[in-house]
Length: 174
Image (cartoon, rainbow, N blue to C red):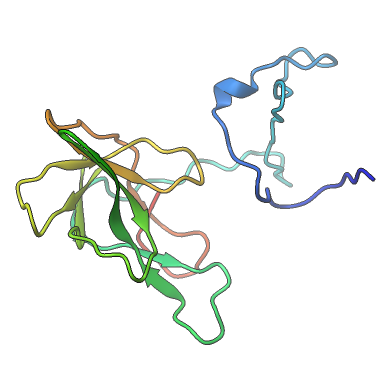
């Protein structure tokens, strides 16, 4: 039996894809996009009729910080946050790929990060001269980092801003 309905959230295994993949013009209204094959365009409803403006970046550079993941629904008998670590996922000649992980048993030689001109650079304690930079990610993906020879220029996609999920001022990466 097929069920259809409305909801306020996008649930797994749904994934956001590039806007370029959703550029099929609607049959009924030729001035709107309706998704594409195996794609659906989703629009945010605004009760006032005015779309919300983009969140403002507070800063694009930050000297030394660590990241914490905050549970949307914290466990009853555990901490509300967990530290995120930079962990290696692939090494090939002259290239090192890493991602952020909440793995409690994983080791990491990158305990702190810096952000300069919206590019995050993890700092290695084992090789202080190693240049690693953030890569471009899609919504829902773990931020990734790459160290390569020659050095990867990095993706300028991060800044600090006010968290809308919590009423107090927090510094989040966006």
